[in-house]
Length: 359
Image (cartoon, rainbow, N blue to C red):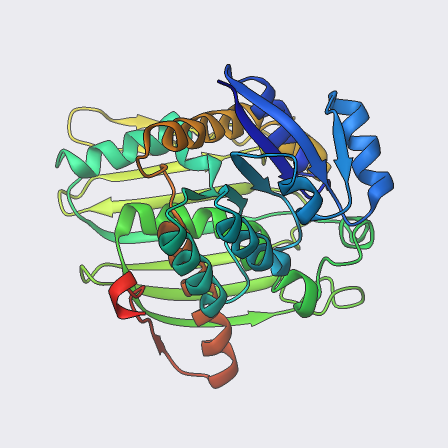
């Protein structure tokens, strides 16, 4: 029987979800929901979806097996909790939530309900990222001891004005860290392991006339292994230079994955694993890299599809999805710690995710 899935939220990223779901055999999009019913109806018509409704309750009443969540970040919690209460599996857009306490409530609800709970970090499915993870696992790179995240993006003022919820603490939960760099922070933790201490600073250096959240951030992260990494992120550069995650292993080998232009599949720009030297920068001044966010999203559809396909298989087989709620909690915990460190001026120690028995 077809896996019956609904989509909650009909904003910019939702088109990727619809296309991804429609590319997977044995999956049926039953309906979509948005607080703005007209927007839901337009989206449903564009994507050939039968039902468009204005509430989660109406959507769940259509008899779903699972749903994907594409709403603004602060709304994720209430939808996941409602889905867990209804016994509906959930694949949620990143970030998992806007604070760790909310993430813990979501994870707890999913655990107790026995539902599959995944969070969308499609860049983990890039072959270049998978290659680094494999080189860590098989020892060619060795345990990572140093890491670096570089997020040097361009966002015009129109990006924020087009969606009134963006760039506000109460509706966006944060700025460049929460909305953009969360992907690279997730990948960094996937490579480096559990973060245990964060020291960071944030600022609003470029977009202060139209946002209140940070558009610039720097941090140092220490991991349980003893490894350390730096994070640099901004949406203020006047030519988008994309995103890079770099790790250095105990063997002395260096490996990076670089996404340029933003939204294009990342490549291993640096690869110095012994006997496999590769240096391949994607940077090219002839490329217009200041893309509209819609074009950025469109470039990621294939990898949305891979993660949605993984989630659907996890629901059918009862295994964990590639990125669980607990996995997604890690990047949020780092971001929350950077914000707290910026407020206090000191380092912040991270607490591990509680187990079901500890709650």
